[in-house]
Image 1 (cartoon, rainbow, N blue to C red):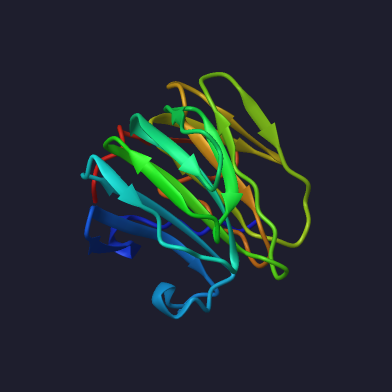
Image 2: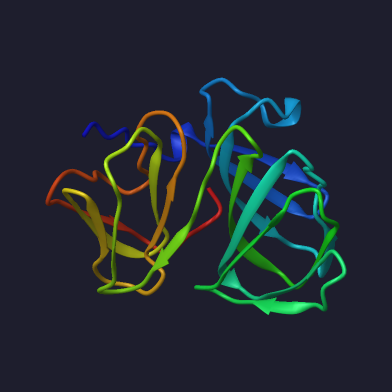
Length: 193
């Protein structure tokens, strides 16, 4: 299995009316978020407003987790609910979404009908396995360390250490400092790159 390490130098950070968004990875390479021509996109946003509306993305499914802070979400006609670190919510990107509260989040967007994705949140000592199949595998270590070995990723130190997804294409782990078979990758607490 070949791994590609992405670091802050590979990320693209942009401002929006409520804070900043850092694009961690996008597929295919060279796709542009604003053109909505991507299969999947991983990003982390710093939300600095007390109230914000999500950008409608009707062609995408979304997965959202909070890395720091806490927010209240209202998705479509659902009642508002809290989203705290370690929890994950999946929703239709075309649904109206409002949030209250300030946070740093982790976001996966997947093109409907052309790609599939999932996000697993691991905490210290927990492990997830993946099948060897065509697709992209991304490992995002928000805090602590991860150990990757044949067919599995294990959170080694801190709670909420790994985000894991599977889509179509090649294999891409990030950001860590080197994730190789049987090695440990360390990452400090998330910060705004």
